[in-house]
Length: 154
Length: 117
Image (cartoon, rainbow over the protein chains, first blue to last red):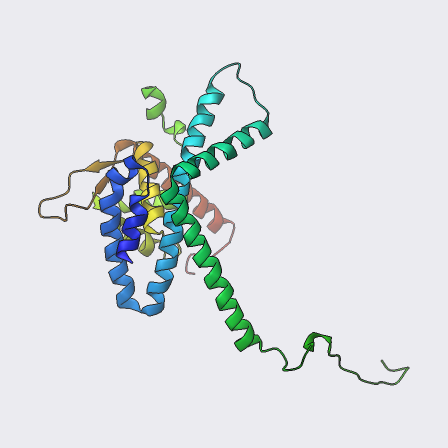
């Protein structure tokens, strides 16, 4: 886990990595030890939260921060006017270009999403079969219960 | 430019996490792990930021000039980064604490909860 977190940090932008990379690794290592001392499920929960938090930060630093800077620059210049949808389209194009350029980061993000979605689907399948327990008949959703009652007393 | 930076009204109210970080640094310089632990304790577990979220908030506070990096003490882990409140950060934390104090007093006055509760 420590190694995986180290890789995620290495994907962060240069300035952030240089300034906080080592400190983040140290903080994460101590938190990881705390979580492991508490129990297995705490450490699993912590892994999930930390990975998602880190990927969120990377996305924000890689895509949102430069876009925010450009937006500020553009809006500070007098006379530059663009439609709202033009600006959104430009940001989307820029984000796509950046994702294509930094392939390692994109691959890591896509793999993480794929693993998370796969795990989610697998867990839901198990829960559906074990907990929800559908009736052991074909087309069980078409079964109905019949009852009778007196016409004046429903 | 400096005049705008020093004007307390120019500083927007800190977010919940940012305020907890500022309060954690009130007693002196601290490193990321200690700040995170203090935030978790002071918020009663309601705020338990991930390492990424914590350093993102620290980075923003540093950019806003509310906290600053300081040299770590001797014989400390060299990977650790220590932060301390700046004068501007102390003023911002004080202003937010006063605002919350007024809000709590109003809530008590309006009988939202009793003193003993």
